[in-house]
Length: 248
Ligand SMILES: [Zn+2]
Ligand SMILES: [Zn+2]
Image (cartoon, rainbow, N blue to C red; front, side, top):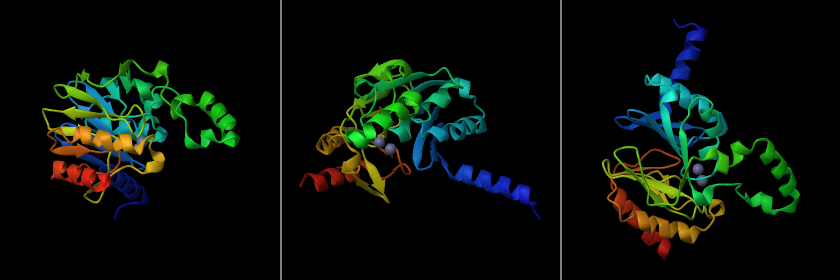
């Protein structure tokens, strides 16, 4: 029989393993509170997104779990400046000296819809000034300002594609070597059906659809999302289905 202590350790490990997937050898997806962080373990480690603020300990623990060290993180790419993608950045950076790459149009204080309401603007500004690196990526957090068209030193060359619409500076990342696209929140998946992100969390939903058309020209076999498990089958037909459905 297991003691109570053993059981809690086992359930913790189970939960931990359950929330991590190896997408292909060396590329791991860790999910915490619904937000994905992609961990690309090569000679050095690249992170795509950083999850929510309290996700950092899970990410760092996972990196140790695969026999690597947080100090090996050399590059952190943020698909966009939303709290569930950049919230863990400050804490991860306490353990690494990684360069941070973000699109130029997503650097700075993000205007949340409530901030447009006078009642919330002032308190939010105060919170942001105290905990600002938790809410927004600021110029001082960023080492590599992206515009789209860059090729980052990861997976033999990771193409940066500017895919605005969810936020003005949203990017997708394409690995030609693995025919793999990291799409952030450009597309969401419900079961195996691809959908647009909810309009209310997008800066411009029509622009988001145009960005999906842009990535539909890439040869994609594996599609990784900001939320949900990767899609390994029929990626292009499903993207085209989404475009045709939403264009009408
Ligand atoms: Zn988002
Ligand atoms: Zn998200």
